[in-house]
Image (cartoon, rainbow, N blue to C red; front, side):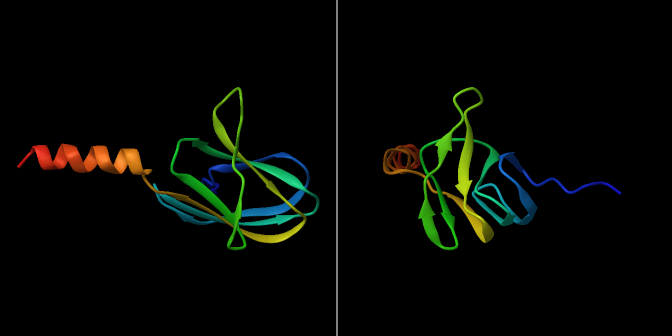
Length: 103
């Protein structure tokens, strides 16, 4: 059987499972069960506007210096990892100005 795409991989530590719950362009959600402190790599290039939370608490997103992909440290246990993309203010303003110029 074909394995579902998760867009997240363990790069350090030990985990029991990583399960994709929601995979949308601007919102991703995973259940991560980690046996030890682990670092997961999200297959998304980091850009302003991305934020992450673990069990509904904000967590830092680090950026892999070689690939530009997102890295998140996960402590041992079962966790709900969410990533959300929202346009930052300068981008929203530019988008608004471009739309206004059409009218």
